[in-house]
Structure formats: structure tokens, C-alpha cells
Amino acid sequence: MDERKSVIRELEDKNRIDKDAVNKHYENLGASLFQKIGEGEPFAESEGETPGALLKEFRNLNIDIAESREIIKSLEADIGRLKELEEQITEKEAEQSRLESEFDKTSLKLGEELMDHADWEDPLKPQEVSILAKINEQEEKQAELEEREGGIFAWIGKNAQIAVSKGIILKNKYALQRLYRSAGEKFISGRHDQVLSGEAGESAEKAKELKDKISSLAVDLAMLKGERRNMSELFSAEGNPSRRISAQEKHIIHIQGLFAGLECRFGTLAADKKSGDELTSLLTLDDEQLIEKTGGIKAEIAERDLKIAMLNAAIKIDDENAEIEKLKKSIQGQRQKIAAAEEAIGKLETDISEANNRIDELDLFIKQNGGL
Image 1 (cartoon, helix red, strand yellow):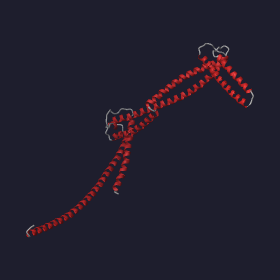
Image 2: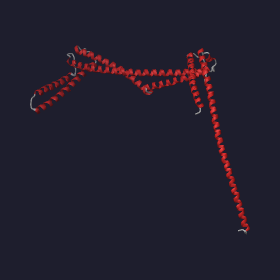
Image 3: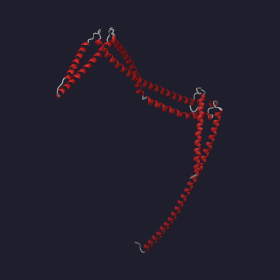
Image 4: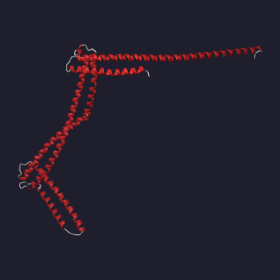
């Protein structure tokens, strides 16, 4: 293996490390200069690789990141609000269910108390009397059946009749509860000035209070659900907020990755003194020392590049010489082939001449003997 190629690889590795160091120095210098400039406007508007153009590019990247962060902040607030709405709706629905259950029990109790209230006349009372009569009738029938004695067949028939009787009693008790509940709800919903006394009055007051709470709660729920619906529709139209946040975060990472290159370009511009006094005036003694140190590294890189180029040239010369030797050998081979061919041609020409002489002798023989 050619040792020069090994030397070239070593030089290239050193150059790669030093070039990274140079870029890092320029990156740090550029970042420091951007920080010093801050919100100031030291440069005139310009295009191309100029301080003004690079500063504008730097600020646009920062604006881009700030806008993305605001979008993320807004989306996170929306997600938080939607979660808050879900929790409030769940809480209020549970409260609504509890109040409705309590209102149902209170209405039932009120209806029962209204039927027993001396000062209250209700058109549902006849229905109550009818249902109670049916319940009493079935309870008496059930008691009679339970006292009846007999054989196995009588016992089976008795149990069947008791089961039917119990079913009728249960059905009528449900009907009675519905009647009491209906009476209580009608009283609460009705418009009247009558004030009930005793337990009925207390139940009526409690039922009204529960109804008001349920109505207020229904309004709150409608508002919360309306807001939730609007937010859900917005999310459906604009896309999943979590995915949008993820997209913005990736965009920020991409933009942040552009700063290193931009800062390196800005530091390079300052170090090369191409910007005149615009950037030079911002350089500190530490910056100047960094630039000088970086210049030394760049000089070493240039020396190595020259040595690499010279080594590559020497290798190329050797390659060309090797090719020349190869071509010379090829020429020699071709010349040998030519000499051999010329010798073969001479022999063939001699053979032709001898053949012509034999032809002449034979022609003479034919003529001397009178011809054919």
C-alpha cells in the first residue's frame, strides 16, 4: 500500500477536525455578535451576504420560533379548556342526575302528602282511592289464599294464584307511585297561591328549590356543551391539536438547527473584515484573539491542503509514469509483432517469386513443343 495515501488520510482527518473547530469558533463569534446587537439597528437594509441581510434572517428565524411557540401555547390552552369542559360537564351531569333523583323522590313524597292534606282538593284523589282499593282487594285475596289448605294440586293452584295476586299488587303500587309523583309535579308546575302547611309545605318548598336548581343546572350544561361543541368543530376543521403541536415542535427544532449555520456565516463575515466598520466596531479584544487563533488554524488547514495536493500530484505522476511504462511495453510488443509479420511477408513474397519462375519454365516447355 502506498504510504503517501495513508499520510493523505491522516492530513484529511486533521483538516476535518480543524475545520469543525473553525466553524465552531465562527459560530460562537456570530452568536456573541447577534447577542450584542440585540434589538439595535446598526446596519442598513441590504441583500446578499451582508451584516444587514444576515441580521434580518436571524430575526426572522426568532420570529418564526416565537410564532410557533404562541401557536403551541394557544393549542395547549384549548386542549386544557376542552379537558376542563369535559370535567365540568361530567360533574354537572352527575349533580343533575342526583338532583333529578332527589326531585323525583320529593315529588313522590309531596304527591302522597297532598292526597292526605285536609286543605287540598286534587282531581287525582279518585284514582288514588281506586288504586288503593285494588291493592287492598289483592292483599286480602292473597291472605285468604295463604290460609287455604289442601292437597298437592290445591297447593300448586294456590301458589299460582298468589303469584298473580302479587304481580297485580306490584303493578298497582307502581301506578300509585306514578300518580303521587304526577300530583307532586303538577303542584310544583302549577300556578296557584295556596300555601301548604306541615310536611306537605316543606316538601313543596324543597321540590321547588330542587326544580330551580335543576333548571339553572340545565342552562349551565347547555352553555358548557355548546362551548365544547364549538371547540370540537374547530378541532375537526383545523386538525387534531396534539398533532398540530407536534408539527410545530418539529418546525421549531428545524428552525433551531438553522441558527448554527447562520451564526457561522455571520462570524465568518466579521472575521474576514469584509463588512468594514459595521461589524469590526462590535469586536472585543477576546473576539480579536479568537479570530487570530482561528486564522492560525485556517493557515494550518491551508498548509495541509497544499501538502495533500502535492502528495496527490506525486501519486498522479507515479500513476502516469506507470501508464507510460505500460504503453512502452505495449509498443515493444507491437514492434515485435511487426518484425515477425515482415519476416513472414518476405517468405511469402519469395514463395510467390519461385512459383512464378516455375510457371515461366512450364510455359516455355509448352511453346517449344508446338503449343497446345
